[in-house]
Image 1 (cartoon, rainbow over the protein chains, first blue to last red):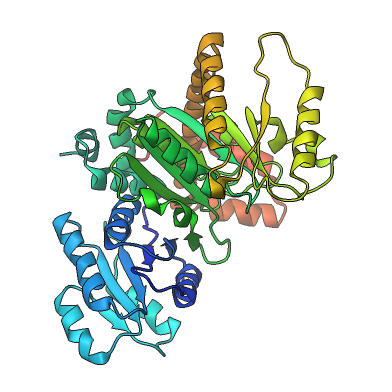
Image 2 (cartoon, rainbow over the protein chains, first blue to last red; image 1 turned 120 degrees about the horizontal axis):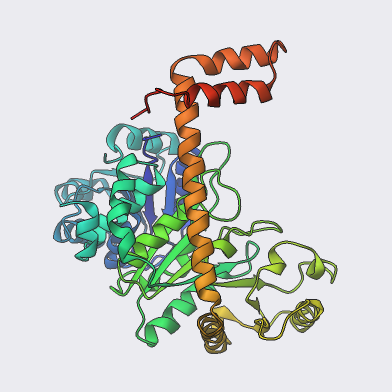
Amino acid sequence: MTERTLRILVGKPGLDGHDRGAKIIARAFRDAGFEVIYTGLHQTPEQIVSASIQEDVDAVGLSILSGAHNSLLPRVCELFREKSADDIVVFGGGVIPEDDIPGLKAAGISEVFTPGTSTEDIVKWVRENVTPRA
Amino acid sequence: MSLAGRILEGDLRAAARLMRDLDDGFRSAADEMKQLFPRTGRAFILGITGPPGAGKSTLVDQLTAAYRRRGNTVGVVAIDPTSPFTGGAILGDRIRMNRHADDAGVFIRSLATRGHMGGLSRSTGDVVNVMDAMGMDVVIIETVGVGQDEIDIVRMAHTTVVVSVPGLGDDIQAIKAGVLEIGDLFIVNKADRDGAERTARELAAMLEMKQTKPGDWQPKVLMTEASRNCGIEEMVEEIGNHRRHLVESGALERICEERSVRHFMDLLKERLFAEVYGHIRVNGRFREIVEEMTSRRTDPYSAVERVIAERFAAGATPLS
């Protein structure tokens, strides 16, 4: 009775116009038994953080292809810290050069998945690294 | 401080957390709700129901904007289905509403049905009460996309809006029992589509056939194009008319009384079931009964009678 269902928000920050990858990930999370809140395209970091707090999610997965990852992803982490909600795990995926990953991790992004990562691997990472908060 | 105390001080994370505890069935949530309950009963509860794809989320988005323009705070509970196979769910109603995400006067929560039938989730009533205690003036419930018989919303909402779209069926659909009987207001959305006028006429004809007494509310049929914000002001106006009718006719008191009855009954059923079933599951009687029934040594009627008698025999100690 007292077992948490894992809740994850999948968001598309910024201006890029394709969310096929985000939808595939959302579907994979659904099939893994998680509750997925999908917020759709063109979200600002403020909208993503506010929605994550209202939905009481355990983790946020951000898909980004536009090249703006170095500003948008750290901004999401910064806003979570401002709202004392940095216990929410943030991870990212998309077209992100290897060279940028250390900087993103330093900014608070827990993991970055680049093109070619299987959905199984991403689900497995979530199971191992995200625990529903008691 | 308790979650309830923090919620009353305006802490959004505490509110979100209590909603999660309610959804996950935590015992502690009941204690929090005891504290919040005296602070509920003020919000106007609006239910939006209709088939998948009718545009309910877009309507809710436009209604939220309209109420905000009037200076009201708005809570939204948006329900989507849980997969019966994996227990997972994709909650996508926010896609249409996220422009309100950074408005402090709006709080949107997505819920999965988690196997509950009737168009709502088991936790919906409690989540609405949390939003009510948070001070939301209007709480809008968007049901899971319903078919013909998912009408729990009518017992939860003060005003129920049934959303239709052109092209879903012939006029026999309009006179069947179920979801079409519960509307206080009917919306034909996507009114730019072929057949919208005809759908509206058929709904209106159905409403005319309804036997009514003088002074009863007469539901109207309105046309909207939510994606272009057409017809929304008229819709808000008509919802306001219904609300005034509820207050002036005394129907609001009856609705609140019925809601109290239902709330108590639901909780009583849930607790009694948990009490009896928990008891026989722990002491192994449940397995025994299943085996006895399978081999036809006992019947379910006698088994239930015996179990209830055993559980409530004098001196039985309640489970914690």
